[in-house]
Image (cartoon, rainbow, N blue to C red):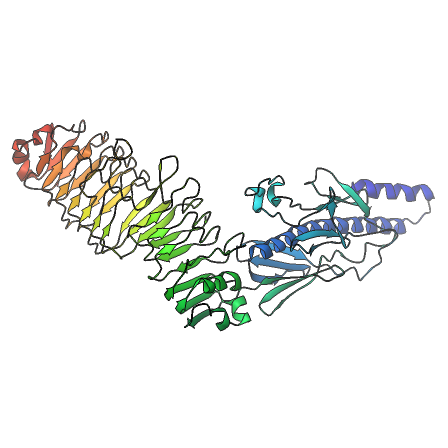
Length: 598
């Protein structure tokens, strides 16, 4: 289109003057000038569309209570690069306000902006007037969340319900605007006048960007010079002593509430203080309440906060707090770490859609998870690392699983499980069906019993697994040297388990009934010399188990002799003990017994 526009202009001039003596330098100056103006228009149009998207992101950040971490000038001086705490970066162009040239005859550059109406919502404006589509003002961003996925209608895709992103283009020398993702276009006016381009680079969506009083201030190029203020991220820490619950806000300055990233509170606090942190601490990321005595819910999802506390990345609860209420961290999408050493109850949707949650330290004391279908405590979370704190010595059964309305077990979405060194016993079914890929026992572990010798039936018959039964993502387990008993079904149905290792100084004495049943990826296992009792059924239906190495010089008592020995499985024992094994009760079930290779 640009080439056609230029060619028609050239032909028009040639028709006027065709003399052989004609000096065409003025013509080509005119053509080059026209081409330059068209190129500038195209660049202007591109910058305007970038500014529209950036303005939309600014309004979205304002709504979601994000802050800004960096403001830098573009290398050519044409605008700014803005980075938010979410990591998203936008570019805004400020132009030169159209002050260096003439608009020319009928030449216009549309002015698009946003304006907050009396309902508190920002709407688009064009040339100072509300942008009206189908008789309604157009919201700058949707009201039901990104991508329209959480709204009732969500028909406008990436803009959420009723959110529209206007788009400009230049065609045939005229400005056009689209309100429907470029499906249709409405003509606004002439893009080029006879003698100018609305001044030099004169789009000027933004009059300026400044930083003052803890805010980045965006001043828009409308007649009201609308200002949008976003908190500016500052690397500061603050410790506050609260002696009377409900007085935290009175102990903070406006500047502290705008800029503090890490807050440690000491003393007595209540829900009112939590709401101060939630609503008034604009950019706080880390909240340490470990030295507080907290009354109330300790919730971080205050009334009317659609997205929870978006800046929050880490929360440390005190040991006096034993409950996390329903919806407490609902939608805190940037939350990464929760340390709650004494928590015993987590309410429904407490961490709903906290999809960046990575680490959770919790108590092993009867910690009950709410279990309603699609409203479980961790619904929408990705697998997280769980650390079991040092509070009890016994981790009780079925603690870390939910039962949904459909009767199915649903576990915490674990990625890695850390178990404190002073845990002495893990009961049956405790982590059954969990999603973790790795189990880490802390050094100097005192664990002695891994899955008690009970394997209870549930739900009208049938059996559930032992302590780590049906954890199908686990590939390797390093059993602490302190473990004496691996109980019934401890790792049954861990179908991807490939390696089980015991320390050189292992104290293991008993491997119980079906402890590793149906671990179909297990090919070899090496049993320590301390073993005294082994259930043959421990390896029932381990179809690929080909090698068992037993270091005990005296044959352990082999229980459950009726169980089937894995086909073609070779038993390796100390050379001096071969005859003892071949003569010991039930050990002759192994067809091949050989000395352990040196």
